Length: 143
Image (tube, rainbow, N blue to C red; front, side):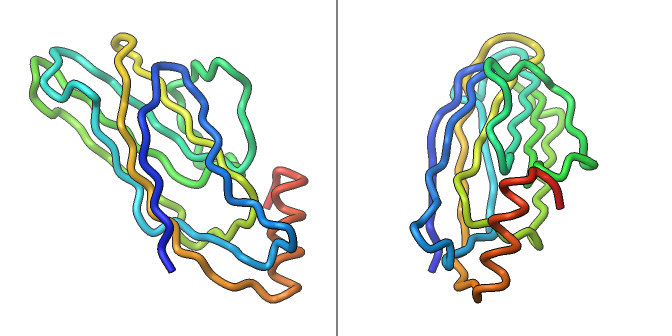
């Protein structure tokens, strides 16, 4: 089963995507992660959107993306100038299974514009061992 989420993020905003269940035996992995500015024709925008296993500090002002961060699930980077798309990169770590709430962040280095996102998660049943490992990873914040 696929669950989809969509929304709008203000600059430096952090939103929670509620996923946790009572028994933790339902897991998720990212199927699709996309985004676009709320005003695609705007002159300048340098957007960074990231998905995390744990809630980052708010307001989230970092435009840096560190693949070495075990809490990072995926990132979208999009730059526009004079209404033209200069750069668009989407990276998703699709082999990571999780069973707790996740968090999505947005920053605009060039200004303070908003950003739309679309996220598809594939629901997968976890056996007891997988559920325990996923829960412990979320609690520890490490892989």
